[in-house]
Image 1 (cartoon, one colour):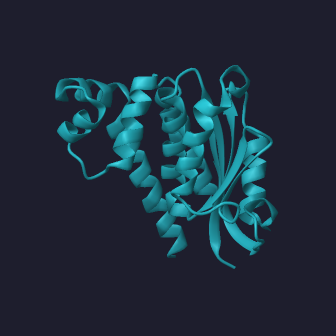
Image 2: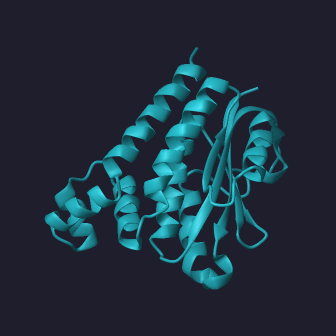
Length: 205
């Protein structure tokens, strides 16, 4: 049985904004991680599930959150479960195993204003992620549409310089520096790197 990660999510405020303003963006993001319905599905209108490798799970969450928040007046709740996959179906929603159970449990236990949670088989990892993700959300939940757009474009173009990112967004390098700082981008990428390291250390143990 392989270890995998499952992200369960739904769109916040989806009823207050036209579906065609956010659904194409969400689907384009999910497509970068595989095919539907094998790797991802959108269901019940504003809910979705994505299976990806454990080390990519936080990156996927950052991409989804920034991609949705750049639209404005909308956000997303995300719950990541990591664990074994014991049954593989033709659709992600019908597959099963520890990762799927952990994702569902994490999603069901999200607090009212908690927008991202992890549940893994490792208690020490759960404790670290609970603290670090909670701190990161203090910044991420307050991203403006401009800040989220900067994060989104930067995540999709990791090899581009700040000047090149500015050209993509049609703003000055000084403007890019301000958005980068306001978004807490450097600190959030440190968290993403730390996450990959601790997950890979467990997977390769």
